Image (cartoon, rainbow, N blue to C red):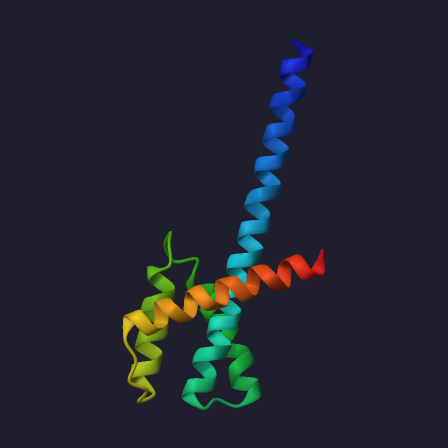
Length: 107
């Protein structure tokens, strides 16, 4: 049975590593999309950094991307930037690709 136990432990460890990698990529994506939105709102570098961190934090409200999309849409609209959910979703997709590339470049 130890062979099966070892395999199970190996699969569990791989799953944990995969989840951590996905978490880091998603957090990086959210930071990048926060920086993108901050640029659209004309924020200063200090405000941009704080805003990007707030977008990362917003992702912890609920599962999925809807909490991030809601935050971005609300903040951009409040800043007078006209933007659709489709544009925000496109930016999320673009930044996800960039975040994954940046993560892989670090390896």
